[in-house]
Length: 606
Ligand SMILES: Nc1ncnc2c1ncn2[C@@H]1O[C@H](COP(=O)(O)OP(=O)(O)OP(=O)(O)O)[C@@H](O)[C@H]1O
Image (cartoon, rainbow, N blue to C red):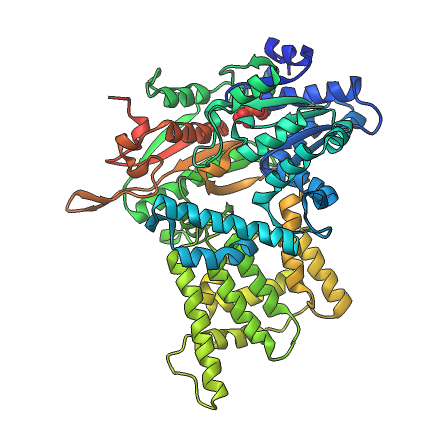
């Protein structure tokens, strides 16, 4: 690879730096060379360059890119630490959190546990869409107060509080600022445009003694995320007066194609070419089976091309506009219509529900612990419904949790009074599937045992447990070599049972969250468009929803790239989101859109 003139300018620059450029313009690549140069020329023994990123996906990509770079010697590579903001902040909090009034012993309040802890507040205030702005503010304030209480009283810190606490610590202690600068004299900030106010406060403190290199693409800003301020780059400019180098619209990710040109045309809303190499458009009939059939055959074809290319770690992403679509596509890939072959894939979903479901499986794998076991099982089922929506629980799910709880209380009251529980009680079905799951003979092979317990939930007569069983399928923690699998195996060896299954599942999630060694995803991956940011794949298929009609009139138009596929709903956010998805493909991006109502972003502006 020959570096461009602009990339060389980055190597030559001193002091704080701001590197801007479009997707695939080579920002990450040059920052790695810059880090290597700093490591070789400037660092003293024991010091390292820190590369901070928001998502683990980006971390894996950067780690892989560093490994791949043959020009950088091994001992230099070892002097570049690539981490997420979360894991860097957590290290600071664990070591110094007591200075900010936190207990010495800290644990992470996982998002699912956080959702459960906050569900009372969320329940009593009601769903956001029914609240006025002041009511919403009151709800947020109550949530924040509760989060702080959990942190200061119980040492359970949720992710959202990491940055505020680290900001307090760094602004409050020059010694700490200097300490970090001694460890990391140079810090690289990836996707800087997405820095929220709390993180920016941390960055300001870090910049006092560290040299900062910010990488940014203002047009890749996350829009649905409050806090990513369009002025953020200006804040950086004003505070640090960095040398600024702009890579413009160069694109090396998909060189030899017109993917970047097309993506930039999307942003402008005018099309400079009648066709674009590397971009395919296909229409599908706007009905469930034909739509899915089109997606599946398109995916077969893309997969066929990639397999034929002989590349062993090929990747193909199917990107969809909503969480709901991610699930729908994943289900259909598992069980396609019309006897087509299933497509092996991984679906990237919000993990709260899958983790809470996994806790239930783990609980069912525990050895017999007496009568309390069933009550705890009911508690976990309630937790699942309370927490499955993460920080946006639906009223339905919260009601479900309350209904299970109340049915169980009635059940217990009946038993206590020596009566038979009501024949219609939902607890009958829960209890009968519970019994089936408890009678599964465990073998010590965690994979087999886990699947056997999950299968009883899926096949049983209780719709709630069926939902939980299906949800748990989304968890990837059981992968070969994965922590969960290893720990469960060890548990069985030590105890002859899965005595610590529950704790192991919770721990596995935390480890998974901080693990940075994992490879970028390969094979077929289904995910929400928003989640594709910072990733790259050999091929991308973008698939959106279709309108439902009644007597020819559109009555619903959900799961579209632009809301309702309405021209009036087009905004910078929807254009940029689409552009980010389109530019994830290296070789080809295929866009599948419904016949009769194609994505409005594909039509020239009127
Ligand atoms: N000078 C160059 N010549 C050829 N290929 C390059 C050059 N610089 C980078 N690349 C390649 O282009 C691809 C994209 O580069 P990189 O990931 O650094 O871009 P980026 O600006 O960080 O992208 P994004 O903002 O979309 O994450 C990588 O595969 C990289 O190896």
